[in-house]
Length: 426
Image (cartoon, rainbow, N blue to C red; front, side, top):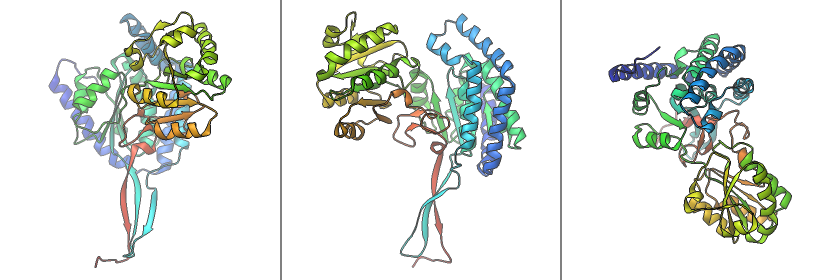
């Protein structure tokens, strides 16, 4: 359905209809059996692979338009849909289908002194609105996770990916039809008008949760204006701290991978912290590795003494999420100063320590207040697929309702259930 961008009333009516259809579909998909949901996921995966050529042709239109409009390299990287990317989307759907279905699971069932049993049952959230930029694979991932968790989804991708998202939406509709699930269980908003976002985040009568994925500006706007609960993260200012009891080879491998494996992701390391007791051995080695990879280094005075050609780091650099081959480096006294730095400048996303000291590792895990905290592992592992979730709807740095990579279970909630046999309260 194409919507004219020149009518706010038309956008309002369109979004209301979308919300009403989604609410009705949520009741059906929320009651669907696991085999029906899994059949839909496999059918969508098959449809995506069968439509690879048309998907890439649609994506090429978006890529050409993006380059012509001066879209940033990091966004172009996220926008591009390669053959590997199409296969990855399909594989992600199949992995979600292989996940246990959390809906209907009863846990913590206990007898009370009255004789009743009280437990909790996992149930769908209902209707989930997802607003995202650039990445067309999010359309498939979001559809998969919402369906598996028994939710209806309203997906609003960025204008730069409109052609790609339309092509993916057609495959989703084929899969839903093959499994005899309602087509309105997944709706992709077919307009680039930003007014549609404003409508979506205010439709509390039809939408239960909003998940924004994109740049800080988008997420700040959604958080500020939404009348619907939001699951979000604003920044990915991720740290690796190399302790003075770290293995040098292990530290170099982890710190190098955390920055260079991919630059444009929210779990890429942006600041490297190095204990002063190991700095003279670790930093010259890492400096050469980063500079050979074309990474611009910005550091404190001690870092600049140990690595030639490092630029002066400003206060802003410690807060920066570069999403680019730029790295801030700071020498710290010890684990205490490292954790203090993370507490002040971090974004509660993902932070790692490299150390052979068990007690320090345990302390870092306990005291660093981030959604993912790691020991001797690259921050690039902070990903739903790597965590065994099959895919992720996003990474939450909130403390309510979900935290870290949000998979199928994160898109459900719980209700109390009570089992009795004619019990009455005395």
